[in-house]
Length: 233
Length: 233
Image (cartoon, rainbow over the protein chains, first blue to last red):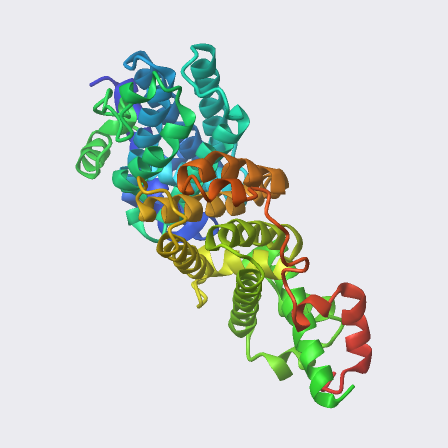
């Protein structure tokens, strides 16, 4: 492993640890020593990568944003229709919120006003939903009698609702909840000829929705990273 | 005005001022002196009514809960079908979130985990949505082919989404957004014979959705209350 690779792994471990600490303590109460020790490195190593807590938070949001974009692009490539891609992407988003602390913390940091870290993940999600529904409309797979903006808003609001309700009760992030929503909405949304082709439970077109180095930094590996790191400790 | 009436008005003014301060500064940063001065009274008067900040927050949530319950009951009395009552109640809820700082702060305090003040307003709203949809099902006004729990969950998630998105962009609390959602969903939700009877924009059955003393404590009146108050200042 090169120096560069080790530095990248340490940075990822710090981002992941920060996400966990932000989630448990909130941004205001999060202490840098907790973040560095959670990644198995010293605060010196943390400061090698990040100037201050705000910079760590920005990195968490940027990483969550990257994960969301990569996931969404991979799903679109692997799915026939834009409408099914929308369903699949929403399932993958809920899966990220369920299993990935970086995505969860990214949404909270970017949206809760405790600090307005750019980019705004809900805004990015809003744009993605609109893009996919515009694509579906252009392909003639949307029902004629619905207002597209209503469909965009309903999808964005429902997923925002699942995210915020899921903070207190993870059942809201179960895939059956989202499947139920699409079972309700798709018959209104899809053109008659398209509806039978759609799976409200998602096609699972992309098995692992969050590829890239972020996925590798599990807890055990973070410790390994700490042992291997070449930055000041 | 009796002593008792004056005390009630001061208490309401304090609750309203606290809601504004909690909303602007967050619970953790909210200072009691700001709350009392916002109500035009001294901190001594505040402590006559509330032991500490937690007690003020509880009173805000309790007042928001009362407002929600009263509004919902009044709408049900004034509306023919349970399904229209659900639509109307959701519109009144969004109107409260748009115009009433006590309702807004109540939802945040009760749901954001910065402190878990009882009662949980989202839970209460969840129960109300379920009650109305059960009533609609019993009356045969729901479509046969939908799962009622999916309709409950979609309604609760969408309104939670509007609430949280509306914190940063009040357009999410516009009535046309919610009307768009019901235009999308009602044709799926309602039995064929019921659909033509429903108005997705709400019937406005209850013009003022939040009766009771809470509605009276506007800013100007809070100052009047302060001048009239008989509690220690």
